[in-house]
Length: 157
Image 1 (spheres, helix red, strand yellow):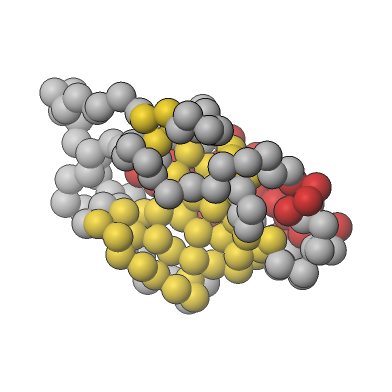
Image 2: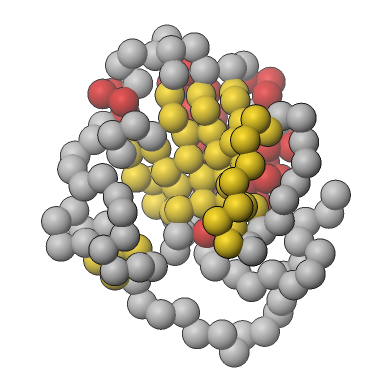
């Protein structure tokens, strides 16, 4: 299925991001739920096998290939954000639980859960337990998800 079409209108103004006074992270909504604090990858991945951190590092490089953004290490996951959080990874003992926000519902056997938050923010959850699963298909999801994170406008697909 093709990517959702982006509207080319530049008339839409995005409001400034709110900055949390405690941790300094920026969010679209004032007082947005998040975990303040100093969380590290070392602590987050301490209960995972070393291979899981390697998988995460490859996933993070794939996200970075989509464009500039921010990686936030939280208590239970790592999130990636442009204006809004658009992708996440939660380490488990032997695998990563990952999610991407897409502007449409995408049916794929790799998704074990799909949650609709808004018309153009639909969370798709999938599992990564081997490097070969971080393929072109996932890169395509990440590119589309990055556009959601940038709050680009989407037309009907």
